[in-house]
Image (cartoon, rainbow, N blue to C red; front, side, top):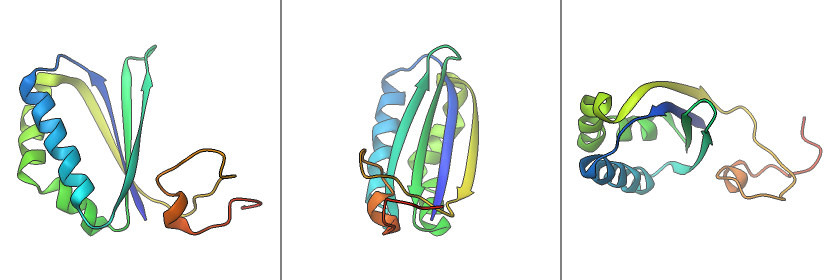
Length: 115
């Protein structure tokens, strides 16, 4: 499994941003191998971070190569004030089951006493 974390400084959004954002979200959810996502905001730093989870790098690459994603990348400077992306391999995921998480079902790992 893999994660792609997109952290950015929010800028000014317009209708085109909202349209592309929805298209990209819908495309991602339709790609076989998409496992889910979660988002966080740090109001003090003015940063937003969204973590997308994927079964394979090939699944992630399908989103990266989609025309809507390419269009958004070309115009990102209009809407955000800087970004950073981290792609990582997930080597373990577990919890106590007390909260939902996109990888809870994908890992198949019992929630208790994981290293």
